[in-house]
Image (cartoon, rainbow, N blue to C red):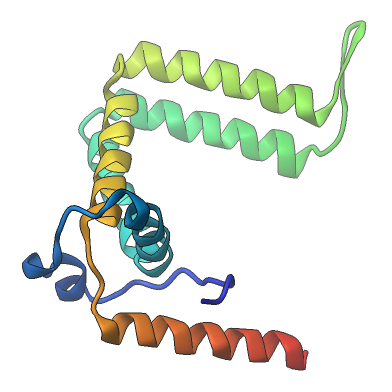
Length: 158
């Protein structure tokens, strides 16, 4: 298999196909998870994004707070790049990122309790469970193998 990957949304009927689930053996589980996480990465991202958006739109205070925190982050890291002098201290971009991260976690926790964290956790658990239980058919494996070879050839020809 190729180590190169691209995020591509696979057909939903193939993603859901009910007859293709089984509990893997302990040796097969990691390989199956890696293959599925690679192959269905677009579908997994879409599911996590939809669940997070539903959570945000059901809690308007949280949505406004996240938009404000995003705007502050954009301002700090794209508009006003570099170190910031605040009184006697110099804040490097790394320190700014840590401060923004801590403030973001506190604000999100205060506004949503643990709702956002729980929805993220449930989404990620769904992704891991699906990737472990879903058996891909031979057609999907062959398609993934061929696209990996194509990507490798493109990279070598550059």
